[in-house]
Image 1 (cartoon, helix red, strand yellow):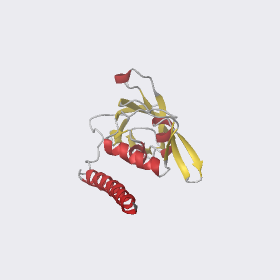
Image 2 (cartoon, one colour; image 1 turned 30 degrees about the vertical axis):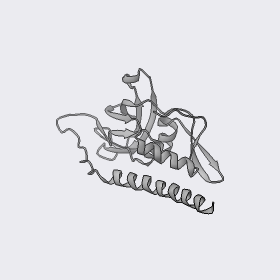
Image 3 (cartoon, helix red, strand yellow; image 1 turned 120 degrees about the vertical axis):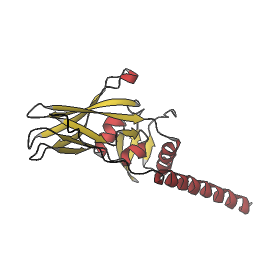
Image 4 (tube, one colour; image 1 turned 60 degrees about the vertical axis):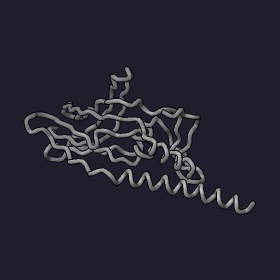
Length: 195
């Protein structure tokens, strides 16, 4: 009897190690994309985002650095980046996702912080318990699709836009989230249907 319990534990741990190894291999197989550049033919404010496609898995989204860069704004101006639209799902969304300040040349860099990802994109909350902070999923995130990100200059009222696409999480993303829930880093307030 003791041997049966040990062999099932060994199979369980072997399965977890295999899943982790597959996720590592899948993550290492692609080249880094070439950095985006501003269009030199366009005059006035411009904005680009890197990456411009992000998956909506909880761990994947929180771990992905999303950076907006812009130019053509007034020097030393505060900038707010707002995500809106998604005509594919006929859903009106308008949430702030980034803040920045331009340099003396009117250029800015705004990184989407963890709190904006959790509260505004995942539509989740944070719980501080015995195991530390965990992300509490209270429902589905924003719908997958292509959104318009718009940068607003606080003083000049100049604007620039770009597109940001959110895709469904992959099986690997869902597996990472499942492992995160086992470790107490992700909690589910209610059962969320798998996509």
